[in-house]
Length: 193
Image (cartoon, rainbow, N blue to C red; front, top):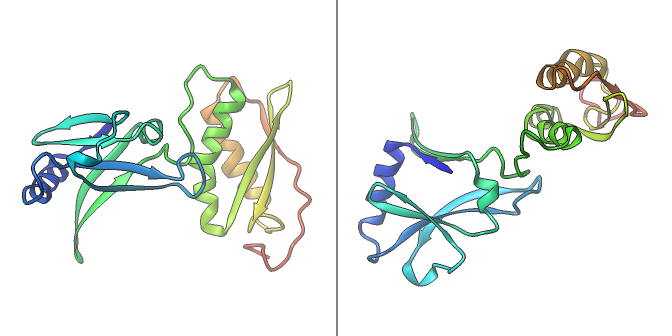
């Protein structure tokens, strides 16, 4: 469920040592399943444990996860990273903003998932995003650009060499094309004018 590296485990043991006996760590997601989702780790004293919590055992300590956060922490990873500025604990939860879909889920759900967790984070660096509008009967993903992508002079390249290429590769044999229906209007919001 949550993969914690040996160095991060050692760090948690050290942090928990001076705490009240029975104190665990709590891993959680604030605003799970939304674009504003944020993950965190905190101390969890024995009196703060809820009956609905899931207890995960690690070497020398336990991690608790509330039932709302649990499905959004699937494939989460905690590491202790050494940098020039010091040591930093990092928590990566690829499913925090959108719950992972199963491999046998409908194609529409799987395409939407890839857009939200793989494509939109890349477009966000330019202030843009895409929305999946529909999946046609002939398996064409109809999308709409927003933010800095709307009216951007590079939108055709982004669509053909980026988004469509990535989605057709991800859903080879299932998805036939990607079509943009955006009424592009260049303006101050456009990343490249």
